[in-house]
Length: 240
Length: 348
Ligand SMILES: Nc1ncnc2c1ncn2[C@@H]1O[C@H](COP(=O)(O)OP(=O)(O)OP(=O)(O)O)[C@@H](O)[C@H]1O
Ligand SMILES: [Mg+2]
Figure 1 (cartoon, rainbow over the protein chains, first blue to last red):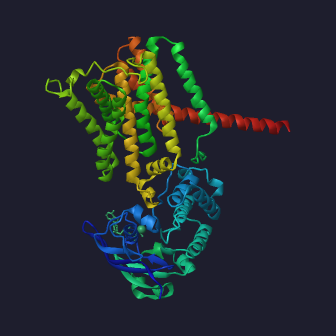
Figure 2 (figure 1 turned 30 degrees about the vertical axis):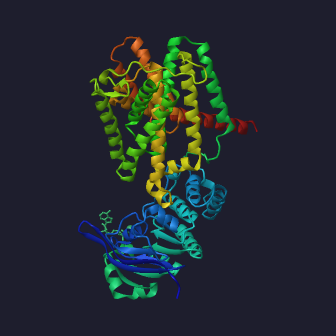
């Protein structure tokens, strides 16, 4: 049995009367690769935002490496080793690609080392040719890569990716799957995805969210066979 | 077409240092070339440019729109005046005019930034602060409003602001030319310092926060510390400018805190553009020059004409005069280059 990296205990988030997260108990082991699925509005993004202190839980606790991080500021959580790519790309539009990556690397590493990390990421993500371009002038897919790169530059222990393949071409999706497997050699990941083929490709354990709760947790094959899961996905063709 | 801007931190290029040196030397040669009146005008432009630049720095590079640089400007002016009149010396009061406004910025900045109020509220609060200070100052006409031996004089201001004593020559004060030199050198020093700051790691984080505060935090930067630092620096610069302003005219008054003064600063920055540090200086010089020129030409309706000029500037130089000129120059340069290239192809 491996060590628990992240744990959420009875986590809850209410928006007025809406219980977006209604009592979630969740565990992730060191080095694990997990997929989070669930219909629109299931609470996946809300869960991610609470893990990174972009939203405060209404109740419950979050533990990272055994340490209670529920009340910490986003920058503290980031420095403890959790990196996130949000669903809506969150990048620095008005500055060049290089500068954005450098800012990420330089938050952890001294100048010279940061520059090295940036060159490595530019090469790995094939962004070298556009390193001088303003991020805001790039296509949606490329902006996703830049955000990816910023998260990678942090060298986090846990990487959260909220719908990383949204708006990507077929090839880009394949490259993303590869990249995720590569990153998984050094870090644990939780990936929110709607693309079932993609989830099969990266061969992760799947956690199904539904109406703010965890419906089930199993392999992709078993999840797809499950009648309850089939039921909640019925009529939401876009998610299939 | 992607716009390319390759600033990657580190020290500014030698070209830039050269340009600064040339402009500075040229400016310092001016007293030999122009009369007293223009020199007086140029001095005040240099002094007001400091406030303008503090606003441009804060708004353009950190993303904090302060309506209240006048709070620090006025406080700096009064601090210098009251301290200089009380202690009968001017060097320490000049320093106090940096420290006290910086402290005020630290206190109100702390509550605004750590209280996590929105950007809009921050702008409104800075405006409220300067208006409160203005009202308070205007209400000090009674003889009971005295600090040490100095009457604050309410509406009328203090018309006896001491000239700067030259520390190393006993009893001598800075004359008109001296004030000009001092203002220009201070402007150059602050400009260079801010530019170096912006090119440092801290400065690059400022820009990151302007672009996306949330992302900066998710990268591990405590954006509140950086914003507060920037706010204090801008407050200190504005305060220092306030003291120089007092020295320049031997006069401070509650108008330094006023809404119209505060609006002026924003207009300078909007006209000059806030994406460069030079922009706010040029904006200030341009507007001040036009105001004076229109005033002397006795056209009347100076305000209306200035309003039209502002509208013109906003419509035709959307990013401000200096950035737009920069864009224009780049376009022209590319045009020339591409024509050159075509010419070469034809001749082959
Ligand atoms: N800031 C907010 N204020 C109010 N309600 C919110 C807020 N954020 C999310 N919600 C609600 O919480 C619920 C969960 O939203 P969330 O974005 O977490 O779902 P999701 O699983 O990420 O959905 P999707 O697949 O569409 O991204 C939804 O009902 C949503 O409307
Ligand atoms: Mg979502």
